[in-house]
Image (cartoon, rainbow, N blue to C red; front, side):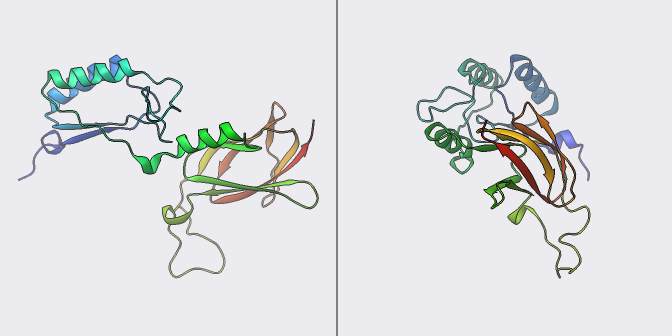
Amino acid sequence: MLRPYEQCATRLENRGYHPPTREYVDNLVEGLLASGVEASWHSAVDPLGMPLFPSRVFPICHPQANMDAFRYLIDRLHEIGRPVVSWYPLNLGGGVLRALLSGLRPPRITLQGPLCVTMNARVQADGRWAVHLHNAPGSAYAYPAPPRSNYLHTSGEVVPARDLVIEVCEGSVKSAHSGISGETYRVLESSRVQVPLLALHDVVLLEVSDG
């Protein structure tokens, strides 16, 4: 016998970038009561592991950290008879570590983009910066088996990452282009380079001046 979805779902997930708003909480409670969902998951940290509430244990919190937002969420869940259990994912504490290291020594170059994109950079002998961007490295990417000799991956296996921004914190960017395709990338405010689309990987070559 097939049951309606609302009778089968037992958990809803919310992994947000900001503390929950009152409007979100009120709509959530209404939805839980109407659907019969028994449990709900609410991230108390952003995707980089920075707490969305003021924390004495992890002092480097999200800029919008707000305890009242979570107090309202907890009180409303208690009102409808839902227990609340909390835990902190230490394995997702990359944001805390990044903020700590950046505070000790600001990085020369940073990347704005999804977590699945990694960046490695080096200064070449000719003075240009070579910035290697890799989309979904490691276990997040399924390499073809058996491997093919003519390309690195099977078309469609990797979701392209869009609107990446490379920011040079020391110096000014004079030009930027792909070392693979030769495409010229737009330089914003003399220090930021916009990469509109990253399929699997790219090497962005930057000409950077000291001033």
